[in-house]
Amino acid sequence: MKDLHDISRNKNKILPVILCGGQGTRLWPLSRKSFPKQFLSINSKNKKSLLQNTQQRLEGIKDLMEPILICNSKHRFLVAEQMREINIKPKSILLEPFGKNTAPAIILAALKSLEIENDPHLLILSADHQINNEKKFRDLIEIGKLYSEDHKLVTFGVIPSSPETGYGYIQTEKPFNLKNIEGYKISKFIEKPNFQKAKELIKDKCFTWNSGIFLFRAKTIINEIKILNPAIYNACTKTLSNSENDLDFQRLDAKSFEDCPNISIDNAVMENTNKGIVLPLDADWSDIGSWKSVWENSDKDILGNVTNGNVISKATENCYFHSDSKLLVSLGLKDLVIINTDDATLVAEKNQSENIKKLVGELQLKDIKEANFHKKGYRPWGFYLKIIEDQRWKVKIIHVNPGAELSLQMHHHRSEHWIVLRGTAEVVLENKKFVLRENESTYIPLGAVHRLSNPGKIALEIIEVQSGSYVGEDDIVRFEDNYGRKDKNF
Image 1 (cartoon, rainbow, N blue to C red):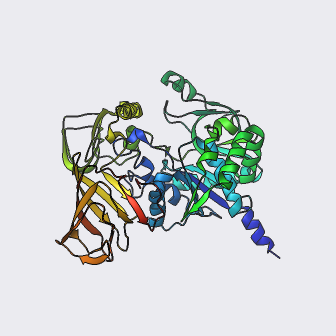
Image 2: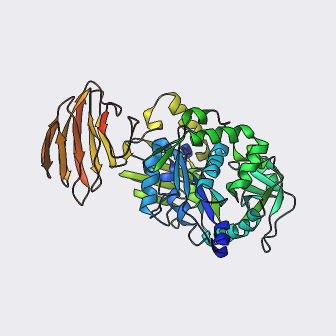
Image 3: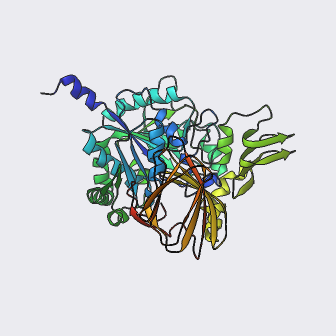
């Protein structure tokens, strides 16, 4: 028979659910479809990514379980690798075949959680938030747990510090007393207001910013969605039952997932339930939704500037500069954001940074590849960096992690030359296997079956020169792959 103490402890388990499927186009050109902002390290206080900080700030919460993560299938190896780097083994990584809103993701996680634990508290988190007072946040979670145990649906309203148009607002039935924190019932949700409306809202202490952070029991949210939006429940149940395991991931069934209404958890449940409770979050929170908010949350010099990378500034005030490699020099500037990457440069007024999403949309409509993809491409075995390319040739640096190997593969339209810059390469070419060391090279003919591996203890770096009638990333036929990849581009 189970010990009563164990039963009591299990009842109090908190299972984090981290939503990391966004594209983060407001932080272009660092954040792009191929590498969204949640995987970037833009916190000046540490070198961890936004996703990693989201998980690590939970350390110290009682009865905390390993998380469920939900991401786009194309980012699965990024998610897994970033969790591995901080020694976290997720309970599950659910792969969305395409983007939907938060309601399907949260209900899928709730259904999945019941396979793991008997009705845990689910702490719903976005992967792109920054919270500077982490202890205050953890203490508030403990208070929220009391309401969750009473089968309430807890959301966290951020005490406003300014009239923001980028956030939704929540109205409660009475103002909060931050010296004696209690949860209050939700009166209504307000969509992102214009600036004049936002100025009016923050004068009323009943209004808070909508953080998008939630805490509730798995069975409570499932029961509410059954009543308020059964179409979501039915589609999510079917999606999960038809899903497939793929190594450490669970691929959600695309056909069933297509039937899920594309709706937020606020619209689907929180605006219509009588179980909704708001707790005041006063812990220096930001959703890092723009370059202005990145600047606000970064350490600055005496003139208010933030500089990352190869940057020199003179007679410059209140600017944010980032340069990956090339020297970036400023003189006599004020209130600008300048982001310099290998293939794109953004120059914007800091207060215009909210409009970058619209700008990226226009680039996408013009089919400008820099809108979505970096020159640096991440793979489960390491990464590559495109140096230069034309229609019939391409030069890349390929970085292979120690002990990792690429798939056994061939190409229909290109041949390749490999030159080892650092480390040791093990090469399979047709029926031969041989080793290349620094400054040695080999040629891979068009149509030849081949594989590149790193048997060493340091990273392997090679220059790859491709030439042929087509040098796209999707010209690949995989015969064997350690990472179960079915999609050609990844």
